[in-house]
Amino acid sequence: MADALKIVVLNRLADRHVTAIKNVIPEAEIVISDEEHAVEHMPDTNILVTWGTFDARPLYLQAPNLQWIHALSAGVEGLLFPEIRSSEIVLTNSKGIHGIPVSEHVFAMILSFTRGLNVFLRQQDRKNWARRTPTEEVHEKTIAIVGLGSIGREIAKKAKGFGLHVVATKRTLTTEIFVDKLYPADQLPEMLAIADFVVVALPLLDETKEMFQLDLFNAMKKSAYFFNIARGSLVKEADLITALREGIIKGAGLDVFEEEPLPENSPLWEMPNVIITPHIAAFSPLYLDRAVKMFADNLTRFVQNRELLNVVDKTKGY
Ligand code: OXD
Image 1 (cartoon, rainbow, N blue to C red):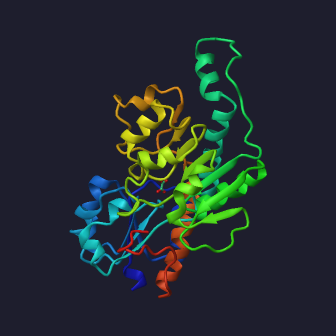
Image 2 (image 1 turned 135 degrees about the vertical axis):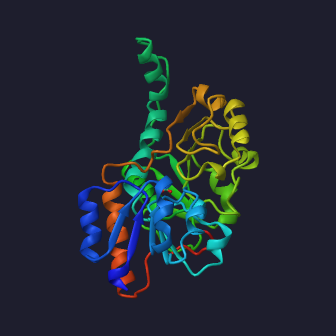
Image 3 (image 1 turned 135 degrees about the horizontal axis):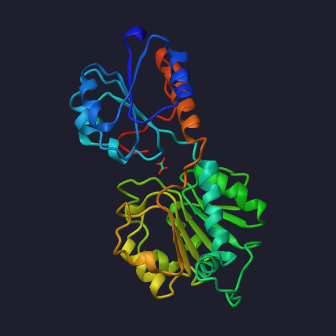
């Protein structure tokens, strides 16, 4: 099987990445393609490496020999179309490589609010030396992580360094060294009520879609800041806008949105208590190195017929 293996990667790779893959299977044919031209390679493709937001269905329909789809991202929403859910094809993701950049991004946003950078950067644009904006400390405040996984764990670790109390919801309530208190998912409102900073780090599933609505914003402190670095559709955006406008919460740091790019007419752009980044929380010069290493490690398992890591449960969606 090994010498017939054809791997199509829908992303540019550096030579060192191709070498890392070749080191696992020197005979493999590795095709680096864009989405438009990939279809011509599909009839004899065995492994497709792509992003989880990409709608791979049209390629899948032309790929009778496909055995495995690997997502370079953590989210796999574009890869969970009905035919793949019911097929034998293995789907894996890159869960586990996002913790460092995403946690740094979360703290960049938290500290921007507490040190007033959301205001001072706007003042700087107008050369305005005004010192009225109050600043705060995070020390001894409480951060709540909704959905503690590998990203949440890195956030919790950094939070401890800043002297924060850390609370989190998690599917299974095992001990976590950087978390002071774990809550079961059904006690989310109680946890939100004590938090100064709320960070959403959940996967987008049928049961988490639009989970954050007005009731949950109402459960938060008026002084709370809300951060979403996961998926926009976890939040009912209209309700978040209401919460920000009416002072139900104090501010929001948002990397993801219901519709991306965020439409020009979204009121979020104009809100002084909102920090927007364009879905880049995980970006890092090391991202692809880590993602390709993860794929190459899994490829080793694949050729040895061992169980793959990070297999997505296609019925659950994560
Ligand atoms: C991902 C992301 O899913 O960065 O990997 O959004």
